[in-house]
Image 1 (cartoon, rainbow over the protein chains, first blue to last red):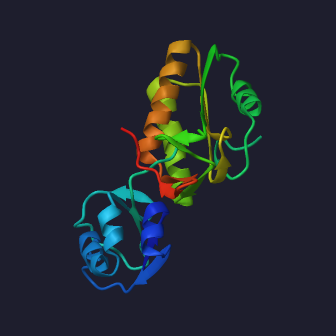
Image 2: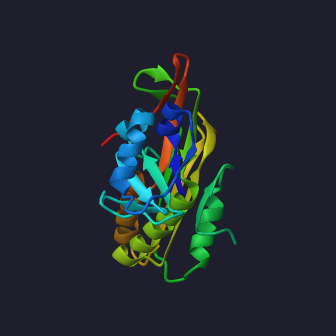
Length: 79
Length: 141
């Protein structure tokens, strides 16, 4: 399973803070984003940054291991 | 002593943070601080309160990395960062950054660098509550 996390404006737009997606061999960050685009278009629209297991990731071809934690993140506004 | 980097709901004491910084080294000749507060207005609207959401584990690890990077980049003797989450009312404290160095220039530059980097790197989101409703904040450049 891939644990997908939504925060702040993305959580508000999707009405969810966390969803689970079945892991399949060869699943990449980009393909996960595409998969979720149909169900959560707001999440993919607002997500200008992604994190995998708590680390910023820009490479959408990154292969996701099973049990990864993926965060869809809108532009930060802390401070 | 409290951790040098924290994310917490409750308010913090600037005096306590500065005292903690000072106890880390007697070579410290300059301490620069930044205090971010909640404004009661934004883009022409009254703001009654702000709430912060965070990706807690990642935000804490990014703040710790930010502190380490600042210590290395500016040869600081120590640094502290505290950021609040949850609800903060107008006029209340949001974030505190303190940088201690042998001389003032490094402390001042590091403090400015840390708050600028925090806004870019740390997964925290701000929502403002106004009489017209609530809205997530779009960051300023």
